[in-house]
Image (cartoon, rainbow, N blue to C red; front, side, top):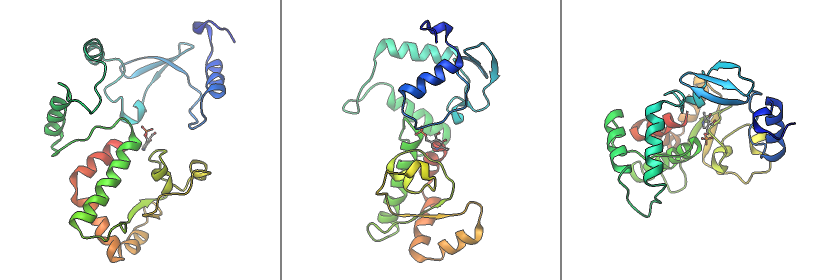
Length: 215
Ligand SMILES: Cc1ncc(COP(=O)(O)O)c(C=O)c1O
């Protein structure tokens, strides 16, 4: 392997990640270097269409000059404020995005897993405060073979043993049913307490925003 970065092959980069990075994901063997709009190029210069778009996080395309310009402008002006302070960007963003998508409020997240965690908390809080579910008794129905991230609560309702092994004890409060199995869903909903929790999913419209963000 060459130590000059520009001379490294895809295989060199894959080996480097395998050696120095945690093995929490298993990507395809493509090593991307550059992107523009819908296209990306690997380190050997091969061009691809990016149909995955980071699971929709890059639906706007790669390196749009207006977005890059806004990022550079912000980075030159103010690097970061913790939530200990207000800043002049969050409020205008929240106003724009809620009006644009027609939601009451927004809670921005850095990752999909955080969005799913927040959706779970919203559902439970609504169940306890609005639907009189007994404390700590809320149940959420999930489908088998889901993937929603790697936090301890999220892997608690996964059936992927690789994602769960040696990370217990797990968070209770989830009922797993097979995907696309209406009989299993009906059976799960027949329990009164569960019925109340499930209805909450349809009552809290903000929840859908978080679920959408997470998928
Ligand atoms: C469907 C789905 N949900 C949740 C996540 C977790 O997102 P993140 O890695 O940003 O926490 C992913 C990540 O690939 C995902 O594909």
